[in-house]
Amino acid sequence: MSVDEFALIDLIVAELGDRAQGDWVRLGPGDDGCVIEPVAGRQWVASVDTLIPDVHFPGAAPAELIGYRALMVSLSDLAAMGATPRYVLVALSLPQPDAQWVCALARGMAEAARTCDVYICGGNLAKGSLNITVSAHGDCDGARLLLRSGARPGDRVCVSGVLGGAAACVRTNQLNPGTRFIPGTRLTPVQERYFLPRARFDLIDKLADASAAAIDISDGLVADAGHLARASRVALHLDSTAVPVHPDARLQDALYGGDDYEILCTTPKPVAGLIPVGEVVQGSGVYLDGARVTQGGYQHF
Amino acid sequence: MSVDEFALIDLIVAELGDRAQGDWVRLGPGDDGCVIEPVAGRQWVASVDTLIPDVHFPGAAPAELIGYRALMVSLSDLAAMGATPRYVLVALSLPQPDAQWVCALARGMAEAARTCDVYICGGNLAKGSLNITVSAHGDCDGARLLLRSGARPGDRVCVSGVLGGAAACVRTNQLNPGTRFIPGTRLTPVQERYFLPRARFDLIDKLADASAAAIDISDGLVADAGHLARASRVALHLDSTAVPVHPDARLQDALYGGDDYEILCTTPKPVAGLIPVGEVVQGSGVYLDGARVTQGGYQHF
Image (cartoon, rainbow over all chains, first blue to last red; front, top):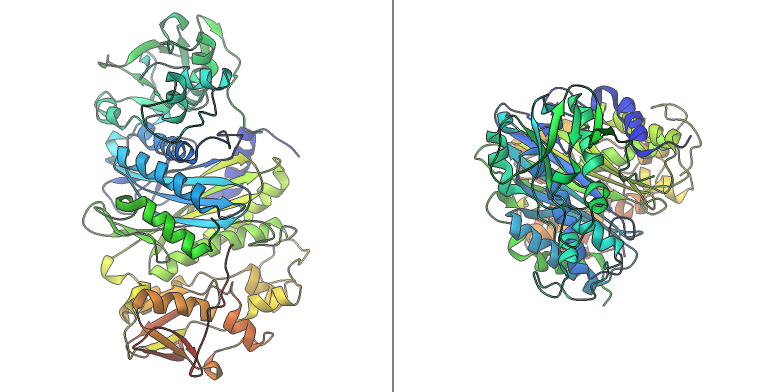
């Protein structure tokens, strides 16, 4: 039996049964991260991501950039939950112990960790096909969690920045910058968007104050709007003319391309700095300029 | 530059620099798990393990058994730190979305999770070579942590049970039981030791009361004794005649074979139920029946 990614996740969660959520697990699979509260008080938020060469990143790119991006992508899930990042664990599978490559990877990860004030305090090395798996952990006051399920009809839909840059980098074959990692230099603007994403921890207080529902845009605006709509059991109406498009990208990149790691959110009130791109209404699914969109996001299988 | 596993880990930790430990990270890389304390009180303990087919488990074995073992192996690190297990995240890379296999894997993991009262509340699916990465998380009162660094000259060295069974399973080519997962049935005694290890959470209170230093025996008794000796800056003297050998195993399996996941510990006082196998003395390294042992444990590269 071969099934698509989301159907397979549903099957796995069904097999886990009582083990997926309960007791000190306040929120199991289905959001950007899970929420754990073994003793009353602050919640832990946790997420895990795997990056495979030439699926999730260009294998020939500089290891510093691969490491930087791998860490930021994983931390972005914590930002989308409103959690303060605390630590990550990195499991690395390598065909050979190439110390120079691995050290460059670690250097890029450390740089991203410094940017987000998070520690890389544990890990694992194994011999195998190249696989970078990062589990990311943060804490949060429970009342300030940003869940996918919190969108309400009447909320405005916003994004946190320009979209499409990372997708334009992929589309224009700029995935091998062939340079060592020097933030801000030698990369084109769209390469910066692809290789040096920012996890938007700068927004989490503002979003929590605004009672936002949130998701990070990893699969693409329309696809992630679909995830948020489904979790909240509402419809999201998007206005394509309002979507902020990266100057070197096209509207299609901004709507359907992933990898930008900006935040898509819904809020009852206006929030300074966020860019309104639509509204939440009763119903289901995503509408673009009034027309229902068939999902077109990234599928792993 | 090609280096061995432990040298590579040292290089990585050096690259991480200030990001490996500090602030709320009480203990970074180097023990069975790291220790995090973002607010004063109970510590979180975290560890991550990767299992690759035909390196860390037989790829043709029943998926239920692979899943059960993968979870237990990862949880064992928490037991060796004295932490109560709370949740795990599972990152699974698969060449194809074989739902039947994945569901059996999840079933085995859920069974192990039930045994240890832990939740599998998050994960990730990716397309790639088969790779099972489990990050395991628990909490602990800081004063009751079981660290590798706590062994003192004069302590007795103990193990928590018979050793060598899992290694005998490998040596006698019993790695494909060709059966569905039914705990306690159809597996030979050494298959049970290999496929159905127990993370020894039943011992953590007793070990903490005894101020034990501890490590789980994954690489082999002698190799793990070496890790403990190095972390504590002491020598461990082992008496081979005292080592409890599984009835279907040989002494060599018990000394040098890994995968048993019993606990190796040192304690100042006798502890009921633990089997004394030697003593801690000033110095460095591991001595077997009085002779210095050159390390012979598992190396990933």
